[in-house]
Image (cartoon, rainbow, N blue to C red; front, side, top):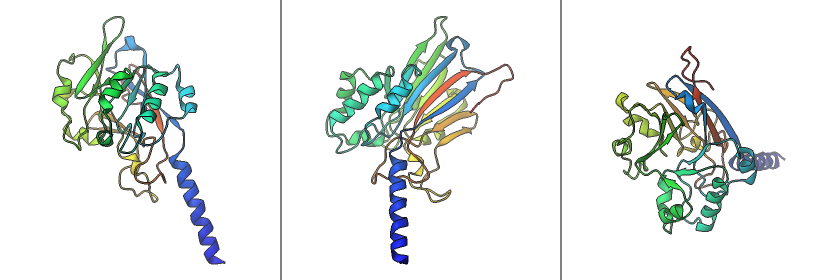
Length: 261
């Protein structure tokens, strides 16, 4: 009898872990910065990282439509064995939300086809050690800065920052959150968004291979690390459920509050 109870509990745990890995959540983050250009009013980024083998749910697309100014793919859009048709479908769904920007993750280099060309054909803006600068009607600027993957030793932060206006509000996108170790005050990065870690993917109580995703402040820079949407190796999660993110940035009130969550 005890054996059957153990088997039942184990199967229930597996079912729960499968459910956590395949959840379709949009985690909403509200941030306010004193230095954010007020003429933008609010700027919203739909951030999705680490899709791997998953297809973005239509439910998420319908929920986000009309709310995001841009889409940012935070790397690991694909991996070895994922057919290009699935990647195209994900991109086309994302394009219905807004203009799509992409940074490379370590698994993207495993694609068995020319992913770079595929992205360009679909009209994706590839931020490979470069910045895209958005400008408001009165000339204030927001710079979305992207670096290539750190684990492949391709990240060139100084190159990505070249030509970025000193007064632009700076958002840095890096698949690997370890990029924060390279930041210096003169880079003037206000926000870093990353994925890669899957929040540890499988956690036991508070323990995991990586820190659980979330928001933190590192030496004055706000850092958001997403749990990501897909999985690697096994399609299971525990304690770090799958997520996408809607990050909305505004100008802070005069009291200078740095971060509102």
